[in-house]
Length: 394
Image (cartoon, rainbow, N blue to C red; front, side):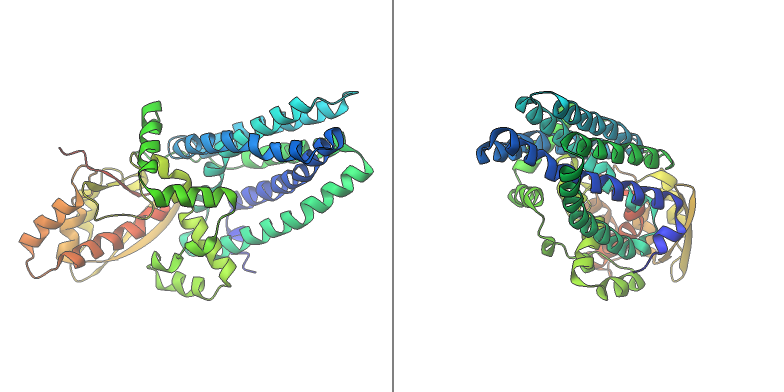
């Protein structure tokens, strides 16, 4: 197993430790909560109702969490939700200590914790891309798969052992302790602020996202599939990776690891789709009417300078400071690409830019021009320096 991301990135080590310990605790509670419900009611219906009361809050909060993940500091978002989840575990432990535990408190805690998980998940899953280099995503995906597999194996087993030896209250307190560790570990991370181009979320923007999602049958389908249990075979990372070295490493991975890479890179498509009309489409539908590219973070407002740095017939090396780390991107320059990058202002529709370039460079096809746009977008988008948005021009 490639441990490069853990060796090279201090923040990723802390994040990985936080996720590993927290997930282990969640799997313990995953066993303890339905067990206690059964012990109190001896009703399979009551146990099944736990899943039902968790469904609605998770669906709603996931939409809001996806919007917030693009507009607030993801580290702070995870910290606040960790506090809420820890309080939920405390509520479960307190209820278990009562002479006669209250069934309604189990449902209440399950509802609250499900909603907080929905809020937290988009921010938590989007942090990895900000903490490792793009070329290290395959290794990070393999590590994530290993962490998840170990948690799903060890967590329920540990939960059963704790229930049998120390009882239900202490089992919930164990999960509370894992959230305390996770909170401490996430606090060690540097701040992860949103892109400069991010807009503040509003109720209307979330509603607009709902309307957009409901109009796209495939989005609703993939969301519910993801909620029930994602079929990662729908992800195709090779279609979106242009770096040959990264592509070779991904192609050599086992199938499950390749799906994990795809989920890391593009899993936010499903979870954030309800806010994409305001921020970005990770699949980069560059040919959509009105689609425009805006540069952010280290390149914010520097589309003209970037265009000047691109030299026709030569490879331009662009240094970008991302989260305090200098990353070098190489762009093979052409005259048409130089002209196109000058339109990465967030206001000019890409189709309009292509039409202009077709007139200036009649020998260059539309497909070639969109291919050049995608080449640059795929280079900058994974590191948070380029986003797709609706053009602001009438």
